Length: 124
Image (cartoon, rainbow, N blue to C red; front, side, top):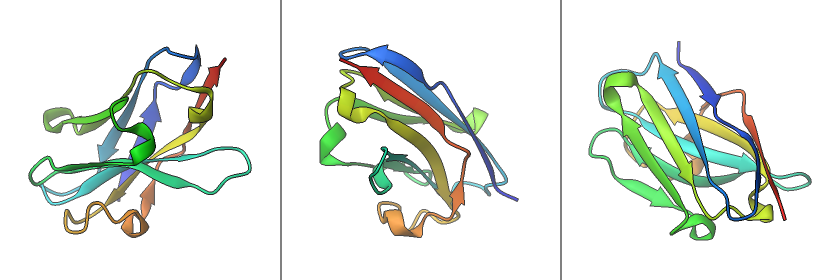
């Protein structure tokens, strides 16, 4: 069974930084992908960035390029989302998600395992 547990959310002022963690279990070998999604109040959930476990390839939404970074520690089965230069519009619940194949890792529609989410609030 795939399980994902996020941590690291909180409240910061605009321009600040946060690091989210996603501890994964139940994923096999190096053929999977992890993505970060977010859902702001009144908006649809959107894919923000993702990483392929097979070769470390990443994909970033334009809205976070240059500010957010995804990385992984395969030994710890943990994926990190480093957020810098945070803006009020980054306020959302952030979800970690997984798919059990690295193929099409950047197709956010294919993610089917989800964590519980963690709140990020950025004040102006």
